[in-house]
Amino acid sequence: MNFGRIMPLLAMPVMLVIVEVGAILLSLPLIDAGIVVFENPESLVNPLIFIAILLVFTGLLLLLIRYKAEKVIQAIILISIFFTFVYIFSGITFVLMGDTLTGSVLALAASIAATVVLYLYPEWYVLDTLGLLIAAGAASIFGISLDVIPVVLLLAALAVYDAISVYRTKHMLTLAEGVVNLKSPILFIVPKKKDYSYRRDGLDTTGEGERSAFLIGMGDLIMPSILVVSANVYTASVRLGPISVPALGAMIGSVLGLIFLLSYVIKGKPQAGLPPINGGAIIGFLIGYLVTVL
Image 1 (cartoon, one colour):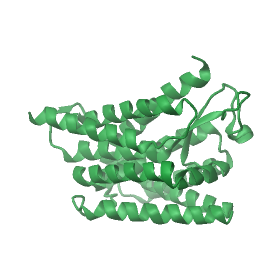
Image 2: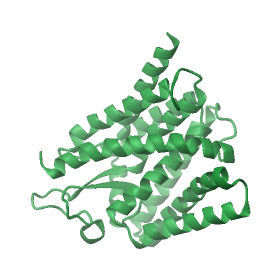
Image 3: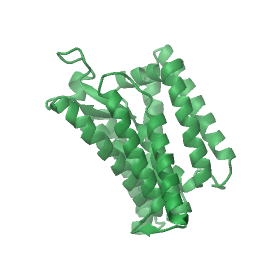
Image 4: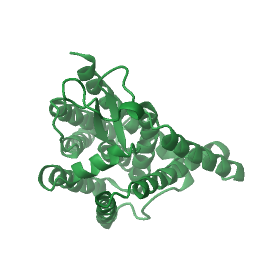
């Protein structure tokens, strides 16, 4: 196999594991800092709120893409990412320095610096590196905010929505194309050639008529990681070091689901990522949970 086929098969599963492990490591600082989204993690209304916000946000971006409001889209994405950085760095500085003014200033400065770097130098390795931190932070925040049952329901609903939006309405493909053209940091990019530059080449086709890089949405790594964190926080079961067996099962299942997805993506056709990845995470979690109770 050549470089262009080996890289995504290796890089994407590794990135998923990094996000999941990072989300687990961030969960304790974020819990200590009291950074949560929902006050009642067991409420089944929480997934409905999550999906409603997602639909509104998606609809807004599609409307802006239709009217070619690129600058507005970029501003919305960067502002959202900035606040995610604020939550992440606030949790870290809270653990290291406590609830101090110095810690708050450092968290704010780090958030501004990371956002500016993403805006000024959107090279693929910059987007991927900081994207891993964003994805781990977002997954951790929602994972500690939602109990396991709401997360399972959320992942199942999003898998169905993703399949519909890619294969039927195809609006997710329109959204992805619009975001890619802006070089916005909500996608992970895996190059097919060693001298690839996202800033220089974008996603121009290669000599064989294929795109010069593979893409995977940040949400495809965030969503299964939410279940991993939730299972690790809310299931009182057998643990292997810092991770519970159900959480480990969700990790393994999500990675296997991603590998299954890549076997189709490698052929060059856009695929809905959440059905196999979320499905694998849910099945892996259930297996891990059953192992601990039987």
